[in-house]
Image (cartoon, rainbow over all chains, first blue to last red; front, side, top):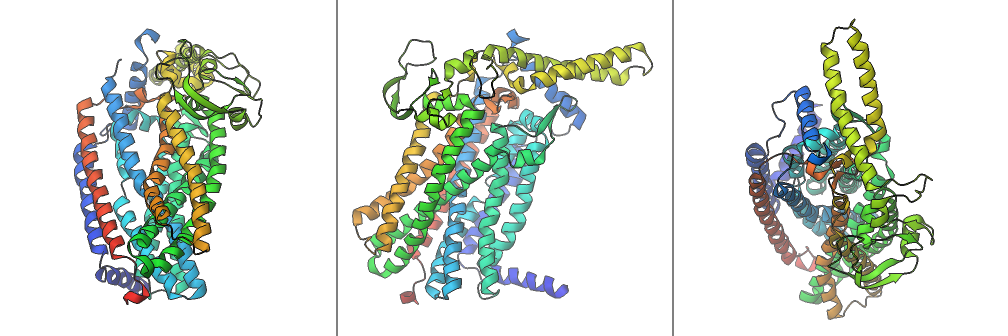
Length: 74
Length: 530
């Protein structure tokens, strides 16, 4: 089993080590993922219903659904 | 409660922009994966090193596109949680389950097989490597399946039941969701039309080599064109069939979208399909007395045939869809928009009443006579909700005019898609014929092939514009309009994130084009280069 894990590890490690044009791409990927998850998600895209229990979420959305009926229809 | 119109518009613009950018990367991934896998299969069968080098070059281009495009779709999921929180909660697991399956599958299949494809040359057997290349493409297609299942549910919500207790739709039939006719057709239409984009890309780049590098790259270019042209031609013909099927589904499940696509203000029997036309910009509503078109050429009986499979079939226009009163295919009578709005309001009120009574029941004394009365009321609300739930979203419609999607956008986007789709059939026939006869030497034609590349992207994007803009005002067809789905954020914060994404995606696109142009300029590793 260790042999298999070791071979898989070496397969990936050798692949990354011997990369030529791929290094530039990995840099792009890592910068992109950092911006997306560490900046955009944290600072600009918090979950709007974050911090609420499921019951509170149901209550909140239900209230929103009732409030948004056009006034003359209510 | 009146929401800021700016908030709805900016939220929609942000989502549209993110989806459009994401869809610049996806079709090329799907298309190239098939082409490079076929090339490697030829190498596997013949042992000819030329095909290995050819496949490796297109894999490199695939890798650049894959790396830069990967995870751009996740931003759409961020937006669901932040900008479309009511929608996210309301759809429940129906939306979450396919996206979760997609995420897990994409990660494991693509992370495994993409790595073997790139790192595995000379390290794994030829057969295993070939299988990995095919599985990379199959993995990408399966990922697309789940995304398209989620999208199809928004167009044609099935396999669920609304639970007023949780205010969520709960999946009752996984197979109805995963294999709804809309999902199946959408999958084949979106994925196979993406093969067209991949094929045009390969042909455009190969033609550029013929123009710029001449004879030294002729064998590589012509061989690539033969494979891509054959894939593209087959894909174009299949897309013609799936497009027809897709239009039929739109007619059945989203007739207002079809009316907008056709500029069909008044329906009837034996309706013609607008082949070419210019909409009258002054036309705003079916009874405003304005002409529908400044100019139009209709294919007789075309729309009836497309929508009902009967040349004399009845196709409702905007007028009939708003006024109702026509016979539906199942024999029932179509409701008017006003009737649907009344039933929608009844459904929303029943949901609110149900929740109020349910809360009262939780605190009531189990033995009291009130409990029995409350249970009866709960049952009544449940029945009202069940009877009116198909029209739930109409409860939020203030004016029937809100039910009409943007007619010019849908009308012209549809025609761009169809005209370019037809052009590509001709394009592939000519290219395949000339490439196989070794007569692809006309410089003007090679330039046409290069210039056709952006047209393939326009065609693909136009298809999505029809699918998404045609569904308006609905986020979920008939159940939830976008002005209810959207979170109550400040419009300015959505504007900020819109421009942040615009900047991020534009930088990514510039990086992609830059790295790709560099790789294309460097060219394939040809025998004479060694």
